[in-house]
Picture 1: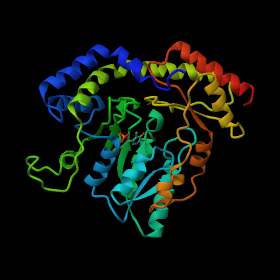
Picture 2: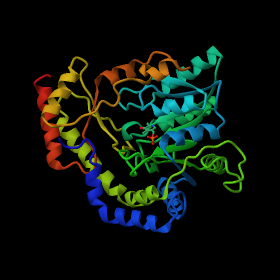
Picture 3: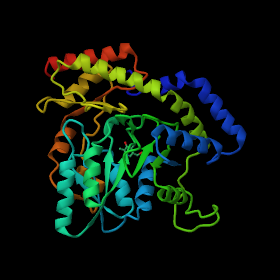
Picture 4: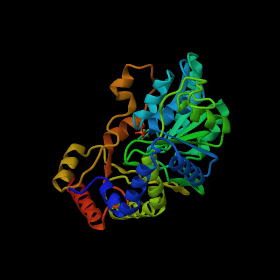
Length: 379
Ligand SMILES: *Cc1c(COP(=O)(O)O)cnc(C)c1O
């Protein structure tokens, strides 16, 4: 079976510089933080176009650190899409605040600004929680509707946190993903658009105070040194081997994303006549193509389709088969949500196809033939 996302092909393509970089780190004896991490932070901040990048141990930690830097905790409401990876909500609960799950846009899969506005109004009307922040997720690589979200956050005095775990390399016009929120986070989990060879994450901001606060909190609440502890923090740092790997992969990112763009256009061209609804990229938006996710007709038997594709050696994934409010961990938590019919419908009808810069043309043809063939026969 072809790989769903081919990390080994990426390794083969970048083997020489990757292996040289990792060996070099082993020789330095400097394994956590240090010059590779500093260089990476500078490069990433320049790439995104913001003043500060602070790396840490994972995207989830980056979310927690952002919320802590804003002093968000018990009694605070944080708005986020009901259709995203669990970590977005988990971070809110980790700091003791209440996630408010908001419905998403049918076509972009991203948080619906009007539904977010309604949710903020509902929380204010109820009077129990204080609306503090909104987390927008750049789902499957597509930036959220930051024009509307920024206006909404301005109107209600909310901080805007951009969860760009899947969006690194995406853009709206000339503005890169990671530059849209008051703070933004990304993840370097191996399968993300910019992945390392383990866990890692980063925060981006133009705000000097938040950047130094987050840097301190990621290193045991360090003051002037690691042994001067001025606040409660955590141990969440990127190690030098991952930084060295990321420096190599960052160099390759632009050409990789051009290839992903090509795969997406080929899919969209070849599948246009099928009954599947194809990914929608609004004018002026650039997707990082973390996933190529289609919507199937409601009446179609998705399980049978998946079985048919597996039989044709085409691996697929259901991102996400459940909206957040159906996750057991959230059902019993202090979690707020109204009706989210779009998230419910997406969870029932989405399907993600094999994707990535190293997906061969032959594999792309095989995906298209199997998928279109089964849809035509009306699985
Ligand atoms: C992967 C992901 C995260 C968490 O990142 P980790 O580095 O795995 O902790 C957060 N939000 C979204 C939307 C993600 O896809």
